[in-house]
Amino acid sequence: METNYHVPVMLQACMDGLAIKPNGVYVDVTFGGGGHSREILKHLGKDGVLIAFDQDPDAQRNAIDDPRFRFVDQNFAFLKNNLRLLGFRTVDGILADLGVSSHQFNEPERGFSTRFESTLDMRMDKQSELTAAMVLNTYAEEQLHKIFGIYGEVKNARSLAKAVVTARVAQPINTLAEFKQAVAAHIPKGKENKYMAQVFQALRIEVNKEIEVLESFLEQSAEVLKPGGRLVVMSYHSLEDRPVKNFIAKGKVRGEVDKDFYGNQQKPFNAVTRKAVVADEAELLANSRSRSAKLRVGEKL
Image (tube, rainbow, N blue to C red; front, side, top):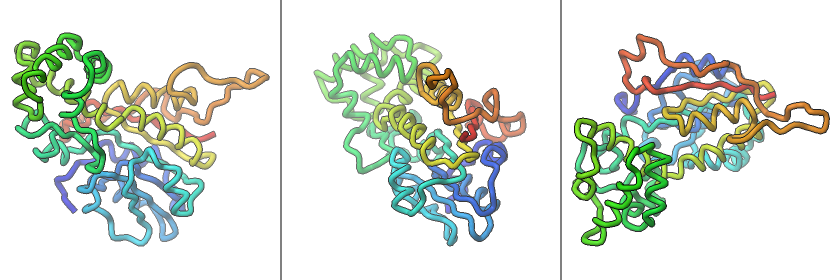
């Protein structure tokens, strides 16, 4: 187990949100370094079960040697089917920490970080075909404009997309250096790091289909949680927080709550916390990744 793999964010708040029953069945859909999972196991009795999901081969090395622990080498988009394969139709609690682990950022060859020169990969699942380089070299200008604008909230998304499409005619954009060279004129002076982080976020979300995966996961969570079961989700930017907030409040990622014939709201969850929970001062000082974290908790009706 790598101790420096990833410092779990808002650990105590996550445990409070899950309200763990010692003999319950819990799911950590973003296992990573296993920090949250290890803490959940401390709260479980001998009959409790913890099921962890992670599609990253690096995360599998952190699997926990404990009879109560099961590891699923899959994306959490396949939550319901995999729980059924393990013999669980319903569970007592689900935890999702949607951040990219610091370990992934620190591995140059994964291409997640703007700090290292590397090929533009960004796949969480190394089996999947689509890489960031493929997005940059094959997507139409209009698609790139949309990705940079919506997923990265990049101000000059249109001219950035045009620069990419123009540059790749001369030579493909496969590495960080080639990308920076292609778009150098469009990177705002003095804001290089923030700008590149936004662009990289946009590419990572597209490569891993993160928004589609999240929406599918939220819908499945409502199906597999027992009444009184808890859904605890930690997100790091508004693109993730918005659907989570809406789903817990309204049972849908967008639009208004469905009502039955008598006007009663048809929604699967009650929000346990009215507002998102954020990290306290001590944690903000100790772990910079907690700065943008927002934690929301829903209880299944």
